[in-house]
Amino acid sequence: MVVAASVHIVDHRSLERFDEAAGASRTLPCYMTEILLFGASGHTGRLTARALAEQGASFGVAGRDPAALAEVADATGAQSVRRADATDPDSIVRAVRGVRVLVSCAGPFVDMGRAAAEAALRAGVHYLDSSGEPAWVARLLGYDSAAHTREIAMAPAMGWDEVPGDVASTLALSPPADGRGPGGPGDLTLTYALPSQASTGTLRSAVRIMGAPGVWRRAGRPVQIHAGEWHRWAPMPPPLGVRSSLAWPLAEAHLAPLHLPLASLRTFVTAGTMARTGMRVWGPAQPLLAGPRRADAVAAILRRSVTTPTGPRGGRWTILAEGGSPQGHRNVVMMGMDPYGLTAGMLATGARVMARPGYGVTGVVAPVQAVGLGTLQAELARMGVTTDILERPEHEAAIGANGEGRT
Image 1 (cartoon, rainbow, N blue to C red):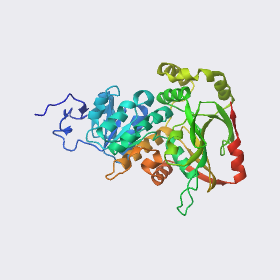
Image 2: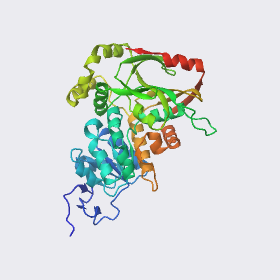
Image 3: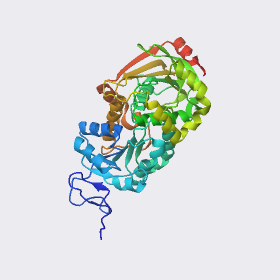
Image 4: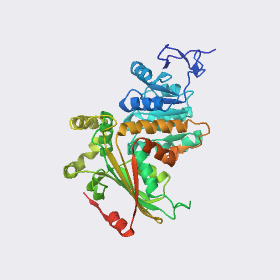
């Protein structure tokens, strides 16, 4: 006997009931979709739904507000609306039945990400998310063995910051064209000139990142660092020029070592004199920002002075990857705009690749591992991101490697 479960999947046109035992609608044979987008009614979620539609993906949307989700579905042509709540993991497990890939845009992920990731494991579906939070990526790495066992891939941080960062890192340490592998571990320094625009969700995540320790690598081993603990003058490209920069925890510090042999890895963001002074003064209070309530309060204050996203012509950013390996020394510069649109495009592209029959990647992986270097480069170029590669003389590389000191 089949018993109908409480409605957790709703077709936004017919209010079709969902049969939990069957795993599909009983009267809509084409109801099931390849990709499910969780957190679709937020800023990044809505953009991702649009990107999935533009790329011709078969997808549904999920979240806890059916009315808001129905609006997204009507605007994008999503095939289904499914009720799921980050506070109820079972609801997400039910929602992902019949799909191949779960895309999560429900953050901050250190607070709300666990349910979706564990639902993907339980249901045996591939997973990717929009997180840029190092603490969340570090936590997700603990699922690597289980992901291999379930034969699924889990690709966190498929957004604007870590995707171009991972591509730049790979190009900066790429082996020679003859196909030989790298001759030994390399040294990598990443410096980000961040966009001046941010959504409320991004501000909340940024404050949480500031309050938690991150990791670098020295002599092949991870070492703990805090935001603003170290300072250097970064040789950013024109029109930026040489810029003051501060140590900053980035998810790429966890992702790059998954597929690149690294002796050292440092991550920075450009920052002016006021930011450097502020980090020195407020540094001892940083751990207080790790809690969600204090972080939300600080984010609300920052909201008054940080511009909200203005669309594809706003949010200019630059990433500099300085790489050194036995094959030589290379700078890779990536520049673009519209970080939220880029995140949506990366998530949509990644989900479509992972939904293909025969996709064989398993475990917790970096963006390049999940989607492929060539595919990511092509998609970034399509979205207006420029990539410049400059071989560096060895003496210049040595000078750049030493330009670091405590704040």
